[in-house]
Length: 299
Image (cartoon, rainbow, N blue to C red; front, side, top):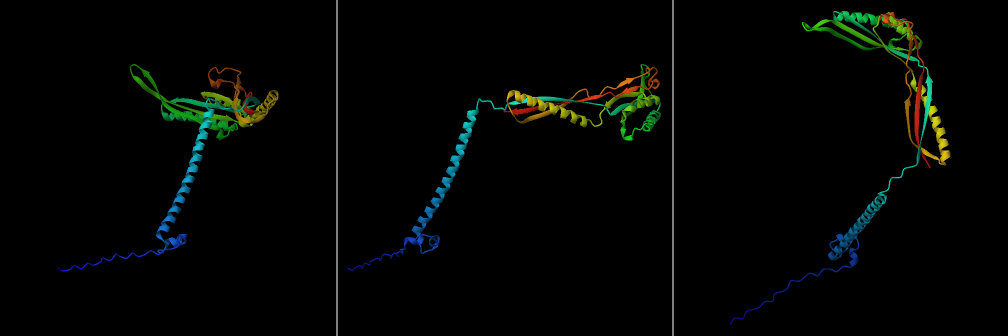
């Protein structure tokens, strides 16, 4: 019988890993070297990452605690004020009125002409002739061009109506009004006399005003504030309090405003404005009244 030879299978030799000291992985340079132990490298790097995560989580948790605490505090403060009215400072209201009597230094009046003609051109020409003549007279009296202003100018057809013929055109009407500012109020009566002499059909709106009303308003305000200060002083002394600050200030103007002019005629208009005797115009006076209201906080 042949004898089978048996061969021993050799086991592969395992290469021993070199042993290194743990101190080889104590820095980053060591961790990058191939010769550094892999296990120690992974262990060190994993611990470092965990430390960073724990630090960041701790910071986030601290911020979260502060945020939640702030919300709780605000809600407690809001809850504690529910049902309670807002506290308002103690105040007093003091009012004073100042009044200044002034003499008007400007007068204004509206003068106008109303003409009829068969054609538009004739109606306009007749009307313009009257108004232009009036303006020339006003300038001779010393009234400047800037103080003469055309207020309205109209031209319209005029009709008659009957049942047989219906509406029939009979002509045209032209009307023109100018506003005249009279800076020398003593000449107001002369302006009205000129209007009569020129055959005007309209004289209305005679009014006397103040050229610079703000000057008198300022004087009235000073008087009103002086009364406010005196009233505040008396009130605080009687109440035994002190003024802390001004809460609000309001003022308004009142009074009769422009005076109503007084015109005295020696005769009535009779047959029309052109037959009137020159009137005596009195400008009178006007009262500038201003009331100041001050709200003061007291303590």
